[in-house]
Length: 342
Image (cartoon, rainbow, N blue to C red; front, top):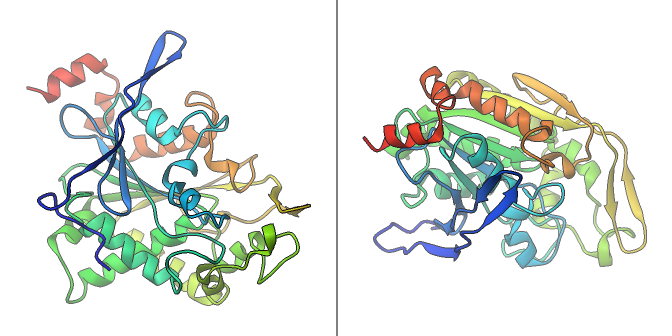
């Protein structure tokens, strides 16, 4: 599946030119024009001057919808703030890092209900597709700048996709499909941050119906993706173990936030209440944090100054940055711009 188009043959599509500002007390928040880099990858922010301090890529979770347009927008809707007023990965991160972050988000077929475009999609194909669109594609150009760390952030099922992509990349590097782009990306990959990713696919099944279910909206049937997860309990444990070995080999730091609140899934006439789950508690990570949120709100912070759903990620990024780059964040923004343009 060819998802990538080179810059010479692919014109970047300017989706939204929304150079507007929102009052935030005495400060203003600038909205960067969103760019579609290839069929899957969207650039939501990049520095106007100089190289970014880091590149951060977001992978959304499984989408409980049959509407293709809604699922296709998950690269942004999955990361809306708690009040729904903004896509926080496009605004909170640049603000917190003085406009020195390159922020990207990925769209992939992740519908939990039948009707998606990929009738036989499974997790291994997701990993292969993401490796092509994020790592190998010249128009995305992720992880190719020496000294610029790459951080991957995933919600729920996106954590499985993240691990599958990295395992696929490592397989390529050790096989006949090794490329310089793969080598550079893996050498710059420094972090993986999970929001409510279960340890095994089997744990994820608690959130989903099996076949046709009375509370599943309009009696929709589950997608091939979900059906494949039902068969991956042991494979999922092995994949997590494989990724654990890879993160040690490549020196990839990891952190996980898991929910402690009850998750409610609304169907046509009733709610399916899910008891507290173990998302993230057993996943192999350097740090595991609990959060008073449900499975879906855990990645939707209210603000960038007091909400741990964002602050934990912010601290994770700062810990990954080299000391000299972290020190730059203490300087006024105007000094940073002057330094990068010299």
